[in-house]
Length: 256
Image 1 (cartoon, rainbow, N blue to C red):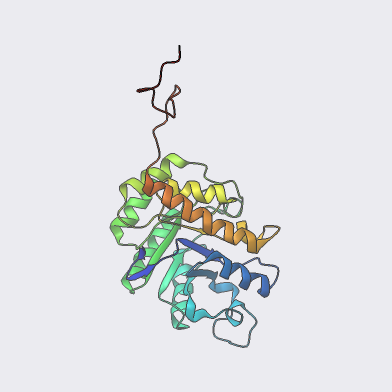
Image 2 (cartoon, rainbow, N blue to C red):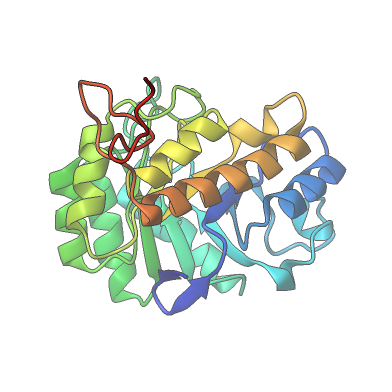
């Protein structure tokens, strides 16, 4: 089970809800993914007006845990204000803290992210910060008390996959809270690699919503996450620089 704070989940795939061509495709993709956690940008939705068109109309939200995010925030103050808005709407007390520090790379601001997490933890939120693949920052945030770490595999929406597997594996091997790979996943192979490196889960959006067939890609990502996790638990063979026979040589019959 994937455990985040006091909540437990069977699926290890978290799915973003933006960028889909229409709500019908979005709904089908969500169902195909098998996800139990849906994330969305609070500032792009009117969470207090049920008549406003949004994905909440099309999806039975009682089946899912909602993970609002603070996308659009450039400071800790903006992120905290957005999180409070999400909590006031009654949707969920979990929050993905996203504070962007650079408009071109869309990389998160580590200082403002830390400040926002510190305040939100005081207010009782279940806090999941989006960060770069910075091992030291991840450990500082763990010490602060956040409930999971969400390092980017590569820049948001880039589809480049995991650019720094070494740092990612350092996080998964040394941290005692879930490491959820977020941003940059482009293919099922990327998702499987993230899980094989020890990630507890993967969050993605563009890789599914931007695919030629989002519904098929959602199912592929579900299977990739499951395969990566099973492979990690099974334990892969060691890599060698020489060949090893797949059949034992002992006991072979001698042919005259």
